[in-house]
Image: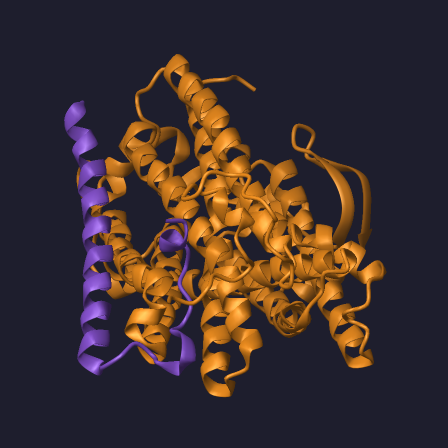
Length: 462
Length: 52
């Protein structure tokens, strides 16, 4: 593979967005979890829900801030690395991203201050309004971002002028493009599941460390129940998304499934090493005919031979990222069902194998989100706007040296900033609810790290 | 000082923030402050484009 500005720009965007997506995927779910905890506290007046809220709201604030910072970088990359793409599609995508800022980000940012610093001043009900507004804002944000990305996957409602620039002629058709509903549902569920996996992992760590308290038990019950409830829905939503992709992006589905030939009786391939050059799979293990059963529509199902070589996505990456996503999802389903079974048996707060697996299982949601996005974005290659604008025609006139240098800087800065942030969040998350604060202050008061030494829940205002 | 930047819990003793006008004033004030900080940061970032 030749290393040019195009491949480096793609790598750079992939690197930045892979970091960014971790935070919204977490905060969308966490904002709703916080709203549920506060709502339950208001309804039941049980202290445990207030303690859960005050514990997780610190992590939410950090993750929200890191999500904002990592998101801003991508906006600039549209101009620096993808200026031709921005020029061609700006009339359609610019307003969608603008609506995201105006209707979602400002809603979140406006009420975040009330949520973090206003509880004792605005009272319980108004504070709950602020928490709910932030949760709704994160969901609206996902709505616009998924709409914009889905338009790139299944464009409609636009026209193209003489210079090749896209402009909207029917905004409703642009926003509610064919792949948007299924992908929006799939992403929202992924966010809730990712958060549930993290909350479960933190609780499992506390149980293993013999620091489990009543909030620990409740957060594990809520997380395991969420996983068990939402994972079957997520499998359905993923299948729905796949059906839409099969209708509008059949080459993507052929690459995901590793189908080289168009034929009746397509298999479901469990393992293979796709060899794109020779158009075959090496060491293929599959179930013959199952592909035809799972994927609806007319038969025979198209294989990659139905598309010219220059119209096919990279098969190895699409094939394996899809399997990693499915594997991570099945792992989460297993954890959820196992957790609910232990809850029913009254053993969820006793350390055991489940808890040892649930701790690393906290990463499964993030793995599934990233691998799912790789499947979606690599699978729609070689286009940025599917079928209309090629990726190679979207890149800015930048040099290899410029992109390589900025990519290196991103890698170094992100490694430092996001590692520190993630470690900091993890330290707060795994701390027991009944842990006494340290005897001595080890960090400067008022600094971010001082909060690690603070009690698990912030004291009420005097 | 550290407490000032920590997330705040509800008012103790069930006081729930005092009279309604004061709670609404705090709500509007904090929301406006959040809005202004966000807008300020956004315009500062936008101003970076002028450097080029």
